[in-house]
Length: 209
Image 1 (cartoon, rainbow, N blue to C red):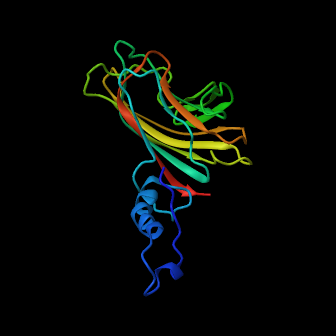
Image 2: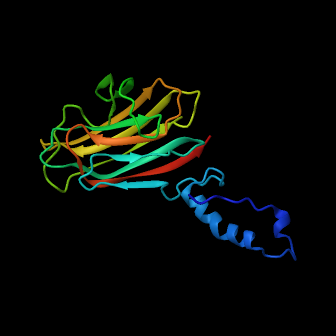
Image 3: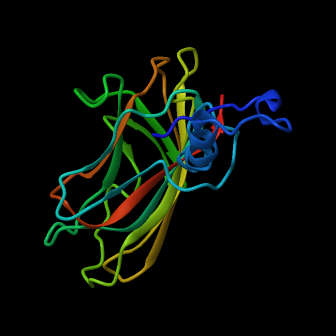
């Protein structure tokens, strides 16, 4: 990630020379802002920090989560399981050691149909069969809170939409929490059965701490 360089007013006053370091900062600072460097001025709605695309992938992982951001957003576009794994659940897991291991208990979630505690956050229905038509996909957004904090429990909020085998258009709205104050350094998305056939997930930083 490009580093933002603060330019004091004194370096840009009239008759000051345009040095190499100033020219480099003028070139790189817009890129640093677009990439979401933690030292750059806050700009909401910039380009994603990271994007992971699936191609028969076991999971999509975002590691080295940025320091100093209270809120991150993950956008899901065109996600679908590999045939014939239609009876399936898309899940989210988090890590405190950058993906060497994944937390496997204590994931609390409340949604339209009830609440439960599990070994992961279930982002789609847990007794669901996806429609087999290839034009269908899972789309939605998950927002995370306090992942970079070392004093607060971690929470998520989200919504997912997909077509069932009925066929029927289904939606799951949810909020989740895990009672852990450790900084979360990686996130993994996967299906409980089989691989992710296609689609992508993009991550954006929303608000610095």
